[in-house]
Length: 224
Image (tube, rainbow, N blue to C red; front, side, top):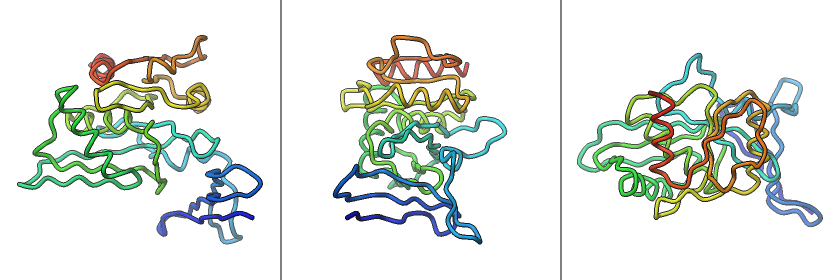
């Protein structure tokens, strides 16, 4: 009564079991397992496998809180912007390639960040595939961080959809995303203004924005 996909990078010990069809329950739920010499073992903190272990923040990295089914997951989005040739390349792994081209156009038009002559590579750590538009803000911040060579602050994360007019739109279940990040020790959040909580969340400083240029201005203030 279900259709399950068994996903994962062949070079990684971790596997995702995803319910694509389910006659009597929810779909798009996932289970995260580790391949061991004794078989599959459940992973109690799946966010840890999608975050790189940097001693200090590095340019081109931004943590995203995404949703996999009903589960908030923290995933590191990495970007590398480098000098391109006559035909600059745009390559994304784990994210939609067409959406990457759109986000680069929005960055140029509404935030003044030009990558027309640059190769742009974007990757979601851990082999996870991200399809929700709430990844837009984190992808754009990672690209800008790589282009300028300045890392985002330690304990920083972001989520939010970015429209063609440069507006930052709300993400579903924003409160759950914020609580999950706070539980894992993150301290700085950049989110859509519509997702701003009515009550403070312990240990979390929240920067709520309406537009992408406003988001980049907040980040410049944090890293200067």
